[in-house]
Image (cartoon, rainbow, N blue to C red):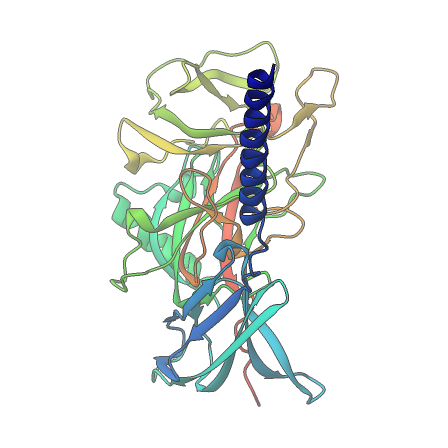
Length: 409
């Protein structure tokens, strides 16, 4: 009995020892650690130089400790004098790296504020902008390229070569005349004589087209932009970005659409339709990359006009984003009167054709940040007919910088 009692007391002693040991280890493991405070350090060069309408990259060295760097917020500001004569801060950027570009030669004080929760760090620099010795205009008057799609109004563009067509269009741009683009894919590319600045929080440029009236219907048009990053004076293929307007992400929008137009056979007899206005319902053959094909109808009203640009050869293919345009027959199926829809924002040929460069996206639909643009491509992004009123097309008039400095008296 005594032996059993001693053995039991021995086990209890060992158990107590281990319990105490475990308690001690728990206490050691739950010791309060000192709270690490987030910190920000910023290094920014004291001065930069650049000429007007050219961008300079201001890239500060920002080190963030004890916090998630992605949560930091950036704000770039400079001093501006308002119409009331009051000097105030104007926000010019909200990303870590600033592409600074302005239209006027002067010395600008630029401030950076980095905020991370309650931690705020500031830095400042000076940017001296010099003159270029050049004069500029607000409009994009230099023609780079012109490729129209078929339309009923190309009799006045009866050119044998593209060179002749480009000469005519360049003259029309200078004189302010409307340039026909035709149906889907018809485009014009023009260049500004300066970089149109991507102004923070503002619309940057506008494009004027023919406006729809009660008697004539025109299609809204899409826009591409290019910034001449390498300053070679050319809109390189990898520098083009699409303006993603209100229709860009809709299910009815078709990306990477292609359509091929075939020159009509002048000797072929017209195939009349059941409606009086259908002079030749098998006039211009088309085929797209979605396994669809058909014909553009030649209407009775325009039966003496040539729809096909003669200098484009026997056939040609146009590409782009195809956008659904609502077209409704309101003439009880007679095809004589139609209601044509429109788009909300981010296009030309609509109620407000002003464009924000910040709407630009790459081929994958990802937003890009451009300091400005040098080239604009306008193209018809819908493919629709309106019966007796013919193809729904449009005419380009001009592209203009909305924030171009006004001349001082």
